[in-house]
Image (tube, rainbow, N blue to C red; front, side, top):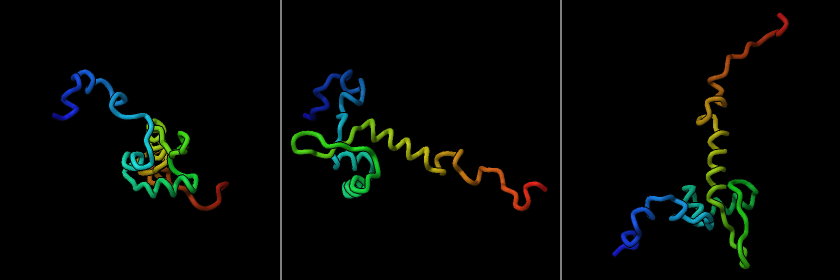
Length: 101
């Protein structure tokens, strides 16, 4: 019998935070972002990518789920394809020549 059927319907549908952990290790964070764990390690080494920290006595690299979501949102706002305000095709054409003329 699957473990999911043992939970009350209200426990399953209440909120995602009751089911999903707030902290993810490198493997789970990479899966959440749809990239490889190696990419996360490279980004961490280069001080790029989502914010991470070390947790526990063994110093495991961890990612906060809310920080991953905020980083994704930040990436969307910085991309001209997702943000019409940054799209250079939407800007008014610039005129060449003498600006005083």
